[in-house]
Every structure is written in C-alpha cells, then in structure tokens.
Length: 294
Image (cartoon, rainbow, N blue to C red; front, top):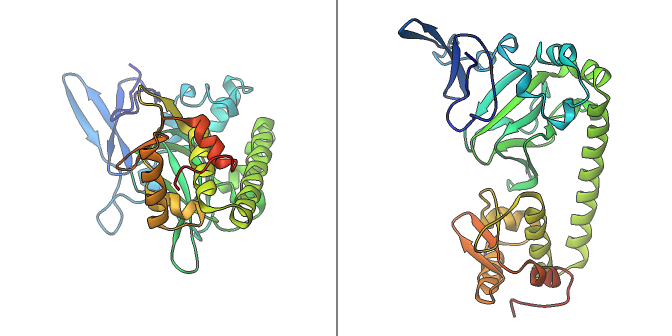
C-alpha cells in the first residue's frame, strides 16, 4: 500500500509498502502497519528533548519517484536518474509562519516547493521585514550556492502550510550536472529576480505611491490569481503591511488606497485577502491613466 501524506498533502505522494506518513510538529513520522494495530516511530530526540533538525527530515530511501516526476525541473530525467536525485533528498512539512531557513544562516541546502506557498523575506537594517518574492509549487529556491554565496540572502517563510523537498548544498554541482533543466531554471530564476529588482527600483524612483501599489497587486494577481464569483482572488494571505513594505509605502497609505479602490469597485478587501474586481481599471491606475483614490 502506497503511503499518503495527510493534513492537506494528499496530492504529493510518498512511499512504501505498509507505511503511511502523518505530520508531527514540523516533520513526518512513519506509521508502521502491523496487522490490526500500528506503531508510531517518532523521530529521535536531541538533547533538548525535541526532534533534531536533521531528524525532522524524512529519509530519502522512503521517497517515491512520483513525488517529483511531474515537476517541470525533472521532466527530462529517467527512472534511474530520479532515484539518484532522491537518494540524498529530504522532505519537510513547514507550518504556516515557520521558516525553511533564515536570512544570514549558512546555506547548507537547496529546495523545491512541492505544495503550499512560501515568501522570501529580507530584514532591513532598521528592522523592517520586506517580502521580496513569493514562491509557487515547483519553484527552486535557497540556491545561494549557485551564486557562490555562503549564506542565505533572505528567509523563506511559509505563507500557508507547505511541503518542501531539499538537498544538501554539497549536492548542487552534481545535481545540475545530471539535470541541465536545473541549470536553465536557475538562470531563469536569477534573471527574473534581477528584472524584478530593476522594476521595483524604477517604480520607487519615478512613480507615485498609488501606481506602485497597483503594480504590486497586479504582479500578485499574475502570480497567484484565481477566478472567483467576485473577481480574481490573490490565492494566498497578504497583509496590508506586507504590501506597504513591497511598495516603499506605509500601512496608512496602503489602507487608504485599498479602501478608496473598494469604494470605486476595483477591489474587495478582507482580512489578509484581496480580490481584484476590475483588473482592466487597475491596470489603468498602474499605467498612470486613471486615478481612483482621489
């Protein structure tokens, strides 16, 4: 019987005859099926009495190829190559609000997001937390070693409960060598980040705040928009403070702008939720052709 990842991860298959997986804390434990009964094998504990970080990761020998076979990064790999890739992999469940890694820590692993949503957050010298990027399932992240950085330039934080698969940083060169698609995806990722940084600098330098907020909302719609009866929902929680940090604005200004847009029928606002009701009109605002918050 093939194991199943519970608690919202039924779409991500994991492995093994006579075993299922269930989340405990930030990890998975293996439930051994023994006749009519079952025994739970909890991860070994460290000196503090809690599971160690190393033991919070699922042994690669228990991972099934179906976990990554359908991801674009691995489409070109055969069965044997998939097994090789999985030989050193570890899977982690990341609770909402928890981090995969933190800014400034040693870049000892790289990852692919399997399920859920993450955000890359940078701390500024004055202590602000700025969201610099959102990550979708299938995205490669934590690739500091590809840029020959010894540490992570940002923290990776779960926006919702998420599932990631990771490899030791020492595997990077072999990982890329076996899978040229990874090299191409890395180049694409770096290019997108540079383009995004250039765009944000231009917006901060030349555009009024309402246009910057409109651009930011439209980028989120393009990345994670989902059609609903009300409009296009940004399909993950987003706070007004995060939107302010993304646009070099303030919480007050973002709140005032979103409220004005709601009164004009452009958006509907909720707790950590934005629905864009009139994307074409919001595009006009972003392009400077219409001012809705006056």
